[in-house]
Amino acid sequence: MAKAAAFEMPLPLISEPQAYRHAQATLTDRESEIETIVGKLAETRQVKQDMSQELLTGRIRLVARHRFAAKHLLSRLQPPRPQQPMNFDCPADR
Image 1 (cartoon, rainbow, N blue to C red):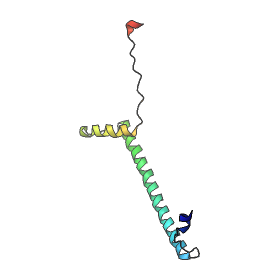
Image 2: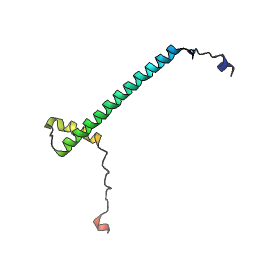
Image 3: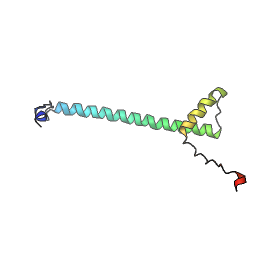
Image 4: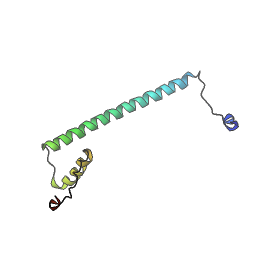
């Protein structure tokens, strides 16, 4: 407890209106940056969905050299398919 009591931290004066204006300006800037990033994220997701739809419907075809990369990218976009259980029963055992 004695160590915590000896610790001093300088704080801005509460009555200082300039500090409030600075904090408000900083928060406003950060909010606008967040809104911009969220907008870009939504736009990117829409482009991804539209591109996947174009490829899956066959309206757009890929050049042969890009097919492997496209399959790899599409496999990362889609959830993995569940595997069928393997059947090891021998017909003679029935």
